[in-house]
Image 1 (cartoon, rainbow, N blue to C red):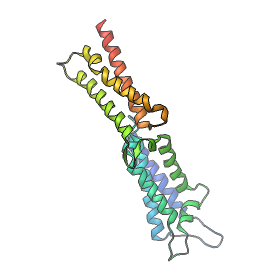
Image 2 (image 1 turned 135 degrees about the vertical axis):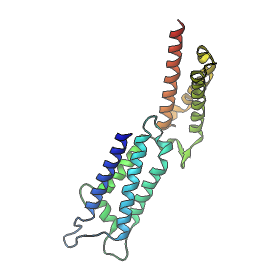
Image 3 (image 1 turned 90 degrees about the vertical axis):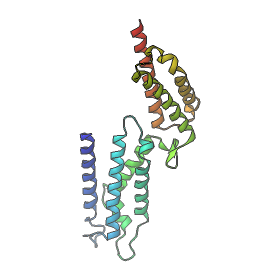
Amino acid sequence: MTKIVHFFYTYLFYLTAKLSLASNVSISSTATIDVLPDGCQNLLQSFANETAKFTLCVVTNARPITVCEKCVNEFNQVFKRYEEIQKLHNNDSEVDCRAVLTNIDRLQVVYASYNYVLDMWEKASCKLCLNGTVFNDKTKGVMIRGDNLDECISKHINNTKLSNSSLCADCKQYYINLTDYYNMYKNENTFCMDVVDLVSESICKFTLKVIFLTTDLL
């Protein structure tokens, strides 16, 4: 967790520093911006904060992968702030805030940061699992079946009154329910990484427990 927090603050410092630097760069041969108008500066800081929050959320939900479920609000906030930047124009100033914040230098820090967020979200295929900010029905179906299997396995591990040798027989149907449901839809490009990871971990956990129990009984 210490490394995660350090990464978060390092990224936030870098992003804020680069964005602040951008506000002081010349935008033409005749005009130089020393101080951004309040609307521009406030939105710049807000965008930096929201991007940092998204980064922290993604890192802390990397194992097990729950990025789509846990970070959707952070993603939407980054998207919202960037859209506001694209629409921003201070009528009381000659400064074009949108141009200043997105095109001020070759690094294009705001644009690059936004693309980083989009790329991470796309790699996780989150849109395949979400209906707005909540899981769609097919995803819920996987999650319910995954939880049922996990609860069955945990019950046998944690309850000394249950025979560990009965884990396979008692939990087998939950395992079949999960894998059959997942396999029925997986070829339709239906699921995000949250689901793929959950199914993979559930199958691995069940298989390993059965192998260990079988070995112990030999």
